[in-house]
Length: 188
Image (cartoon, rainbow, N blue to C red; front, side, top):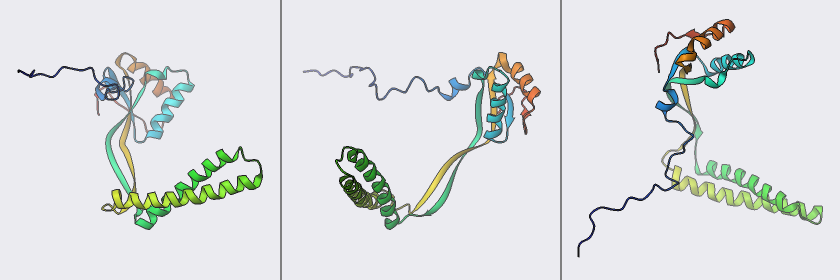
């Protein structure tokens, strides 16, 4: 008996297909032209806000972060005790929230207070157990906590090429602080 050598092609599963509303990097910047550059995001956002206030059609402006860097700031040591404490605090909040939602239907204040007490206590206990377990399973080798940030060296304002002169003129009329005009060569 001969078996087929090719597999039938199935349509892609809906959970595997990329969302259609998120443009790829090339699609997001295709047809755009850099007009101005700012050393920080706040400067670029402030320039766009000023243009919006002046009635400029800002829906054609894209803020592009250039020369991205990943910065990870170490905030402290992670131990099993600290992980359990963080889990206990999170669990207590969740327990309190559930107790308040259930306590709305309580017949007396004493019943409500009891639900709240036991919700906080049991939430803290389960949270501490899960926090300690998570440390043992996932975080044992790392041993520290941190915050990760993606920062850019500069932020450029892009617009479609046919609108670049209008944007340049509008920016020159408002003269945002620390703005550098770009002479049309894509820099990112």
